[in-house]
Structures are given as C-alpha cells and as structure tokens.
Image (tube, rainbow, N blue to C red; front, side, top):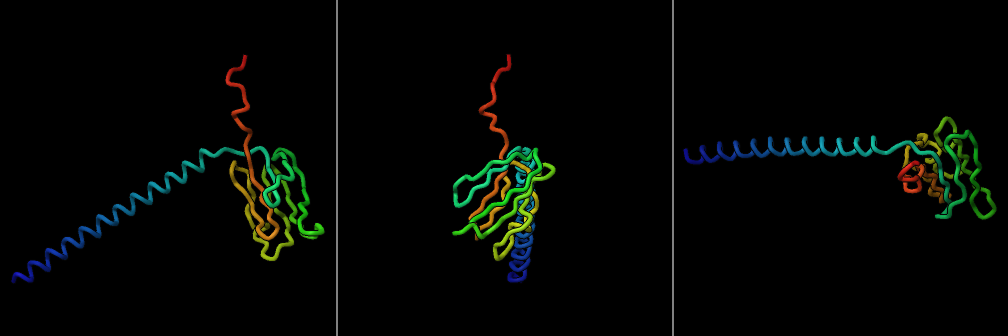
Length: 139
C-alpha cells in the first residue's frame, strides 16, 4: 500500500516536470524566433557590395547598377567566380570551384549578408551606407 502511494506520487511529479519542461522549451523557442525575426527586420537593405580575396578588398560595386564582374583567382588567374548584380541583388552566376556552393547561394541584398567561396577565398558582402558619415543636422 505504501509502495503504491509512492509510485503515484513519483508518477505525478514526473508528469508535472515533463509539462514544465515542455512549457519552458516552447517559451524558449518563441523567444529565439522573436529575436531572430527582430534581427532580420531591423537589418536594412544594403547599397553596395564589397568583394575581398584572401582578406584583401578588390572592389566595391553599387547594388543600384546592373553589372557583371569576373573575379579571377589562382596563381595564373585560372579560377573564376562570375558575380552578377541585377535588380538590387548580387549573386554568383558561375564558379569554377569544385563544390560550386557559392553559385547555388540565393541572391543577397540586405546589410550583412554574404556569399563565400572557400576554395577561391572570395567573400562578397553587402554593406549599407554608413550613417556615421551623415550629418546630424541639416541646415
């Protein structure tokens, strides 16, 4: 009889803990989702793309102008990433790297987004106009 009461008590406590754990997990997931959504919405549209090869900046291009840029790497410039900027978005159309992940990446246009080609050491990043350079007061 005493054992039966203990078993019911343990079972009741374990159900309560499971329920509390599930509530905690759901609340945590909601908070993480809200934070991620807030970060996505706060990040604005970019206005330029900066291309770097092995950490060295090789070019800056406006997202407002449609242009195609050949990014050459390798000892004799035999490697190619073809950057296309069109309709305010940038993407890699073709790449001669073995995996081609960079050419499968979705177009980028928001501040902070980037496309990376590890075999060629190419990084394409979107930046917005720096607000620190803008005047505080317009007269």
